[in-house]
Length: 404
Image 1: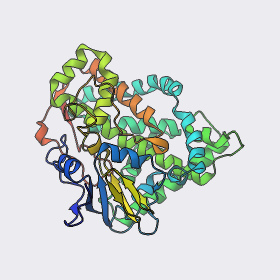
Image 2: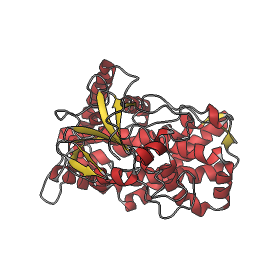
Image 3: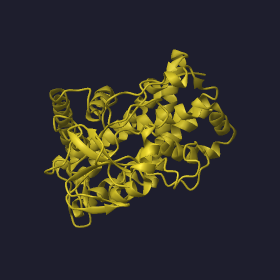
Image 4: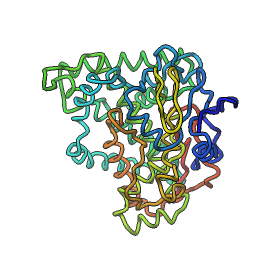
């Protein structure tokens, strides 16, 4: 199918009918118009919804992440490249610069380090649940657990004092929001974060500790390259945005999915060996992931059964791709023991999420702790009452009322 050239572009993001269900447009577009014209932010893009197409473009170096390129369309009407605010230049780059950055940062996200980090994450989750239980039911699980846990984890990894966590949570929210804050407000928030982190980086130069910033300051790669200061700042910004907002969103949604049909929660209580596959299925099943990933192409490229023309900005919907019936049997069902599960929620290829092992670890640990501490957990509101927060690049529940 070709792009819907004759029709007016579709307004994007699509309106949601339920916080836990996919937009109705996804199924129709995959079947009839997988390369659809959409109106978003500063202009028109082409939305890709089929698994094969999204996966192909995500791993294709001809599609750049740089939305400041001539002819590219930004996500905001004022031309601000929101994604550039939440990633380093080396992270967004192609070729050797990106590979060099990724090799250095990924040393902090090895399986060995994640295993060592699990007890600390478990302690954090236990403390947050202690406070929640003490406060009493009903409680908002987003505010009490899903939102604060990832910011505590990422601040610990960055070597940031506990007292500054609230500031980091605010900076993260501003970075990932494309409509709530004005350009001046976003710029002021970025300036505050940059000033704080530059001071933090200098403090780590004088007194390095066991954290990722200290590690990146002192480490060199096999040819003696050492990460410069501006890349250290941008890397901290990227880790905050990706390590906090997206993981908080995933924890909240995963819990909502499991409680919306409580037979799922009961199945996990009966068999904790399902935790790992349940986390993967929650990542796949989330059809309200957010806007998607924008990419720009400067030459004609054939994708699927259509040609994307030079000068096209595409929006890759992993949420739609993860519900593709040609790839996933019973795609619209949450299958807790689904295996294999080739979802692409973290992207694929050289630009896949470098912190995905951390996100998986946090989700697995928090689920383990909730099942052990709060076996009677249930929704304290109907599914229809759950709402999504507007304007975020990644889509989050505004709250998740629960009792136990």
